[in-house]
Image (cartoon, rainbow, N blue to C red; front, side):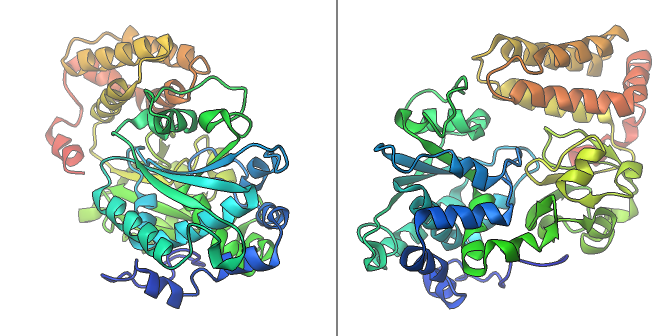
Length: 432
């Protein structure tokens, strides 16, 4: 594993997710420290001092989000762990849910204490079967051990935690759509302001954090925010989980210290490209982030400032390696089919724009495209940008503009010759 490890610190076995083994790894010591020796505001101060940023894609500082909540407002507060993880190419939260559910539960209990939350939720995508069973089992173990429920550890602090299963909607990974779904309504995103930390679940102050973001809290409270900040790079401290897939020799979930050389990660830790193929480009953080060519990633390190400086982002940590010989036209067709299917339909620019983009790319792939279709796709993407309630319309546009900017020649070839330049290699994409 590359660099320091904070989450993937133990060998995965058939029982490593259970409470007895988690406690053998110092589990729930951080919760005891927080409840018995710290005030709620002290916990928030420690998290703020760590500099940890959200790992769900937006990279917003966790401590700054918490600081908005007024602990003395007399209202109930809510906490939600976003375990929807619907971004194609991203499966790093699943590793935590399957192998370290108590790490998430302990960290959520710490966060709930800091935010004075009585009821918390884990919102998990419906397709996650094993993760769902593991998390529910861990919740039951925690209740039986007095680590959830009334008067935890005899401190007077009480917390109930509910696992809420989604129904497979990609849009419900967006924070406001997530809480709308928990409320039993159609999972539509909400206009903001007001912020969710002011009026969120049931119109009460609500904090929503990604699974990986929350799972770091036990380590931070146990070791201190300053210790965490010394790991990684100053503007992006700590580690992050990377889920890498595609045409790579050793796909899977890796924990990397922020600032780790990308080239070393790909070619040494992940074994390079499979079957001796050459790297064509990479999607760095889920399909909502712009592609980077092999030349782009050569000097980069795995951290937010470095990747953003190259014109893309770390996003949700879902990295897809794409080999030479892959048709980018076909790849974009797969992406736009997904976006069109998953649009909730609430916003006209997204509802109609996704359909237009999907139909245009389908027409190109059917040999019926025109060169002006390319400029039309860019125009639709730009018109969507910033004009929808959630960021889905923006994200699809980033994918379109990012690919067309770097591989427009492949689209022009496809339109002029009515076939892919890599027609004999299309199986390379389908088998990834």
